[in-house]
Image (cartoon, rainbow, N blue to C red; front, side, top):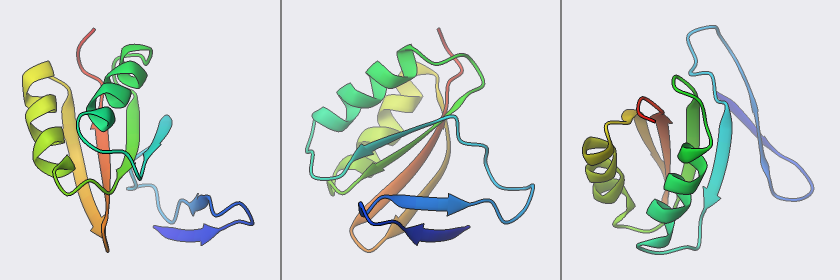
Length: 97
């Protein structure tokens, strides 16, 4: 996936092919530490529809095990985890109401 940064330092993504994950919502938790990213993800997922995908960014070093445990506990599906420097990107599919 190609990324560009606009004047507000927000990442703008361009879909390069049809195999990319379709993102329905984005949540930026960079600078927030445990347990705030989990709380914010839960709030966002709770208002989404089943099958929709949340992209969450976080730089808390504990966010990867936290998100893996949270998705396993809640039944939501962790589709993919990426790491770029200190920032993790999580792709979470809502599968539970």
